[in-house]
Structures are given as C-alpha cells and as structure tokens.
Length: 136
Image (cartoon, rainbow, N blue to C red; front, side, top):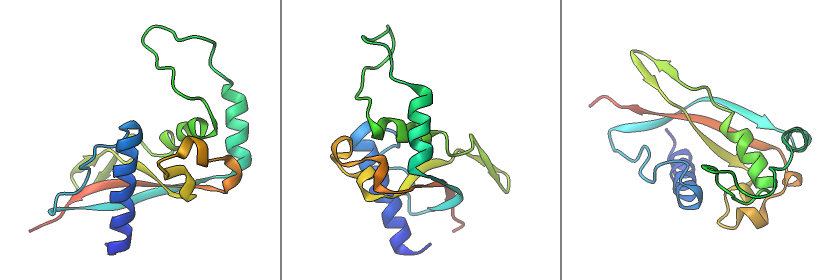
C-alpha cells in the first residue's frame, strides 16, 4: 500500500479516536497488517441535507441511556458515514469488519470539526477499510 494512503488512514484513525472514539487509536498499526479499501461511497451536500431533514432534530432533553451531543451538520454527516460500510466482508477465509474513513473534505476530520465542517464544503468521500494480516 502506498505510504501516503497508510498515513491518511492512520491520521484519520487518530483524529477520530481523539474526537469521538469511533475507531481504536491503534487500529491497523501492527507491522504485520495492512489497511485495504473494500468499498467507497460519496455523499453529496444535497443528499446530506435531505438526510438531516428526514431525521430531524432530537427532542429537547436527553432520554435515559442516550447521549446529548452536539447536533449539527457534522453530526448528520457522521450518521451517513456510519452507514456507508457493510457490516462485514470476507477476504479469503477471514470475516472482517470495515471501518469508515472520510477522505474528503478535510474539514470533516479537523480537530474543530463541529465548527469547521458544513455540507457546502463539498462531497463527503468515504472509504471502507479493513485491516488485513500480511503473510510473513
């Protein structure tokens, strides 16, 4: 795998983990494994806007057992990201769980993503990636 691609996934994993713990910090950093893209998707700003209107805003206050996080355009885009990958993929005899990584726009992955990201920043590009053990 090209070094630049590995760097994108490693940086994205670190940022995601720091921001919302969506991907383990040390995901696929084992020298005996490599990230492999198994699928990808693109969400247009209009599709994300429509999704946000379909879902609507949560009711005021928090229900028991639910979080009361910030509900903004990043929140709705992140819901789209979470639904972008299949539950599992099979490679050879291995069944693996893909992790979604946003590769564009950059604002989605910024440390200040709730302030920086808006649907109008452009198409949301998602790569679904599995960590595949390499042979010795």
